[in-house]
Amino acid sequence: MSQAETRYRAPARLFHWGMAVLILATIPVGVVMVQEGLPRPLQNSLFIFHKNVGVLLLLLVLARLAYRLWRPPAPLPPSVTGMQRTAAHLSHLALYTLLIVMPVAGYVRVKAGGFPIETLDALGVPSLVPRSDALAELAKTVHYLGSYAIAALIALHVCAAAYHGIAKRDGIFSRMWPPFGGTVD
Ligand code: HEM
Ligand code: HEM
Image 1 (cartoon, helix red, strand yellow):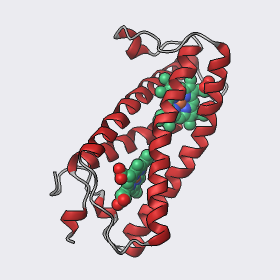
Image 2 (image 1 turned 135 degrees about the horizontal axis):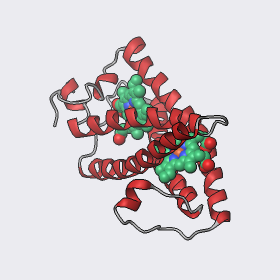
Image 3 (image 1 turned 90 degrees about the vertical axis):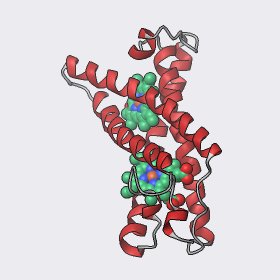
């Protein structure tokens, strides 16, 4: 099978890299904004960025999954076998799961806690969850634990991509590269 036939389609690559940039900004912003002693205006700006980009990420992952159902990716080349194939599928499944769980937990934590999500509020979107401190605390714990899980998975994922792209040079990296253009669309 030629490289062009096994490459992700252009919209799938654009989703992947667009979301990767946003997530790689959202995570450090999340970590910094909860630190004590930050100047108030800076902390507010970081929270506004984190919450609103987080909601955008939820919309993007839903659109991405819908696109994936409509246009499934080409199968992995036969050079990827057994355990590696299973590990790739399971890790991608876990990433997609966390890409939904994290923003949903963030949303519930904020709305059940009675706080604003500026863009949704400006658009007049009503809260989808009741005001409840217990629910907000539960969602906060899920969001906190999930942040370690997603950071660890992304680190593993980037190591796997680098292994394929730099050490093995087996064409797996170019399935997802370049972010736009290339042939298959
Ligand atoms: C993929 C999306 C998201 C990722 C990867 C993410 C990641 C993180 C990380 C790493 C932290 C710092 C660790 C912590 O203290 O919990 C954090 C905190 C936080 N995030 Fe997110 N987040 C996402 C989406 C959202 C969304 C959509 C909201 C709300 C609309 C949100 C609201 C918060 C809040 C309020 C905190 C401060 C901790 C707390 O009081 O609960 N996050 N997030
Ligand atoms: C930062 C957050 C990232 C997330 C959440 C993420 C998530 C994902 C997901 C879910 C897939 C599976 C796509 C599908 O089959 O539908 C994927 C594939 C891929 N990602 Fe990422 N990714 C991220 C960053 C990166 C980075 C930084 C690299 C490279 C250094 C990379 C390289 C790849 C490659 C090469 C594939 C294709 C693997 C294959 O051929 O099956 N990703 N990514």
